[in-house]
Image 1 (tube, rainbow, N blue to C red):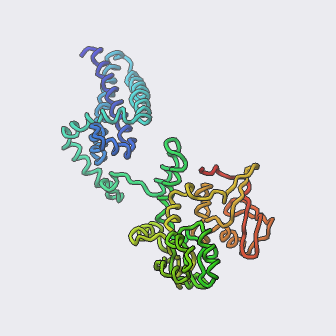
Image 2: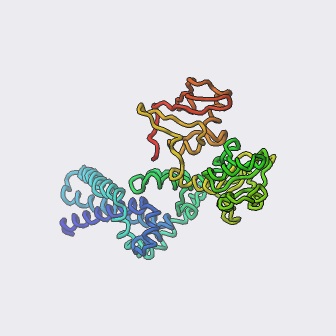
Image 3: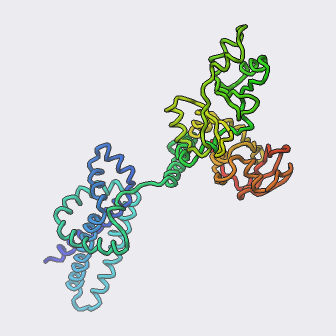
Length: 419
């Protein structure tokens, strides 16, 4: 065989080796979710690639079989060339093998694999067209090899079929959303994060606490009740006698606003417009309560503990706020100061503060920042007290006899809040 033909065969083997190496990296590094998206768009290359990746053991067996064959043939041809060119030099074969290793490493391994890692689709989809018929052609050999491969993997407690499809956990999906800053606004990121957190949130996390419930006390004079109805910013109010524990129903203010100026308007008329009170256990998941509100066609309920005592009030708006957060949340609870610090209303919920500031304060215990501080200090700290809460330095700015009212988070170690 002419020496030129031998060099041609060697070059062809190096090209084929580059193809096998690059296509292996390209197929294995394909984004599986983009791949499924392209399959839905009927991309033929993506369809074939997905079919191959459903059995990675067969695909890798085919690639390695081809790569080993061409590399072995290339080494044999290089040996023949060395003997033909320098028959008197015994070291010519060793030198030829050394040169071949260097050339293979650069041109048939590092370069194609790096290219495939950067642009996997440009190499993966065309190579899928080649591998599908090759797999059919060499199926008996590959299946024979995979019998032993799968046997060894089972000894290591690895099932190839179970690991052929990738799925994202909730935490991994959060990372994907957090890294999608370049393709979606911050407010949409927060909304998606809110949806993912619905599963772990309960109505206790988002309810209006008992001491902040605004309602109508039927024990008050009728004139005071009328003034309250006229000036209320809410459309629905709980109606009770002396205490919210003695609630008798919820009043939709639109039903009575047109009647309150009538001479015969009285408390009994208010009672006639009341709807039955809804009581919600404080451990009810937010997503379950949203479904319950929708099914029962109600928008408000009282949150009770295991003893039946009223702990707070929750509305459909509160539940939606878990998702759309900043659209209807009053962000004056967190105010950025000129020195980089943050003035924070201590009544803010820990979940809301975490979402706004991108922090990871614990949410399993107290539900508000005030509760978290009191639990940490085991007392109500005096104004001017400085502490480090879960690694975040803060100063107590204002308090009263019952709770912390305003705190100042110092500027060090602060991530930029989503907004």
